[in-house]
Length: 283
Image 1 (cartoon, rainbow, N blue to C red):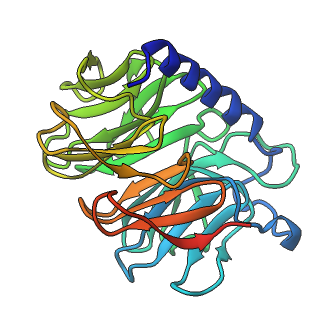
Image 2: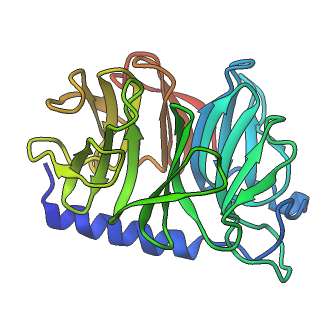
Image 3: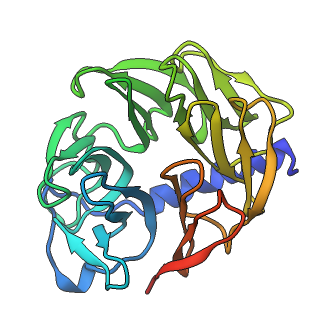
């Protein structure tokens, strides 16, 4: 298990890398240059419950990934971050515009209800850059990289500030809206007050990504690309398997089905991270 110092260095590198990937300012809608429509630098993954389609949120827009087919960009060229699936055809995201205008460089919270074809800004345009978003229990939880703060909203427009801390990812308990798990500069930590405060979990692995696909069951990956499973809400963890490379995005559709994106491909696991196959090569 890596040291807490390593975890702090990892978080610092993540902050610098994210700042470097910001795109020039524009309005929501961005550019549509075919030369920019390349699936690379994947920041998020999600499955649309409407049809089971896998989507990849990237530096060059949102792509749908038909099984056995080529990636298809949907909607504008923009840097899509903090991507999360709310419901059928309904996604939330954040990020940066895709072409230069006089608009602000941060998209705030944006929403699509047509599976990425069109987006609209809901709030915090020009101010917030959410690197992690979750929509559960009719509440949106977001981590804003600009203020380094967890924010929550019941209407997607007005926001309540919670803890201010450095973190890479977080997950919300599907059964209890007040319980969150986050990987902080001090390692994995739990909140029991909706993200206002966190208590370290000293015996937990230092995870880079964490997912909470079912009540009591969490999955995550560490800096060594090891996949971990917890079946008791994060108290204890067991090693599952080894990811094919450092994940840039990680999602758990359920406790068994995982997708991770590395630099070379998007990979699929049908067995909770014990084994992986290539789902989509990346250019």
